[in-house]
Length: 140
Image 1 (tube, rainbow, N blue to C red):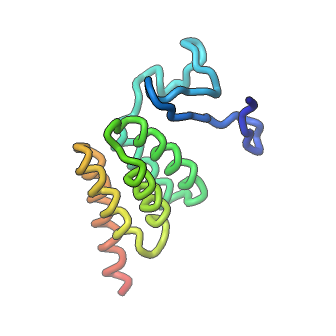
Image 2: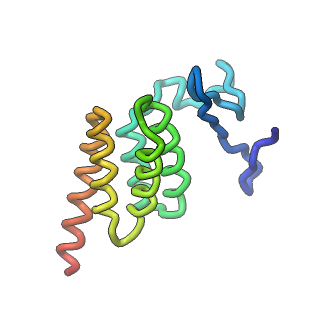
Image 3: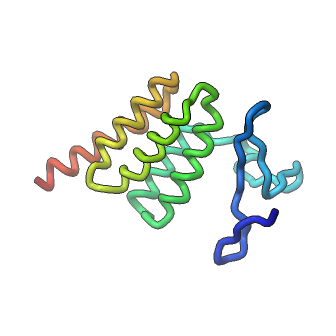
């Protein structure tokens, strides 16, 4: 199997969720000597990663899709009780957050995060929702 390449010929990460022992990283192979600096200092929390993703939506919309897909993949892996319907709903909500109903979509995602016992991620979404609603109120 060969990895998909970006225009800069950097491999993308391909993860597969298989029954049994959980997710298996297929590409690129990660060894102790080749870990990215972020992993060497500790992994970002899901909440921090989502905050970074939402900043991308506001500041660099072109990066949002990649950041959202990466966050969603990790979110699905980190929540063992997640159903397929919930995973699909979360992905749809992330996509809709970039549009005019973004605050409503974020409320759906926040609900799913609360449902699965997350603490920091709903707070990130609440702040983002409040900012979006304030901006909409000032425009209208």
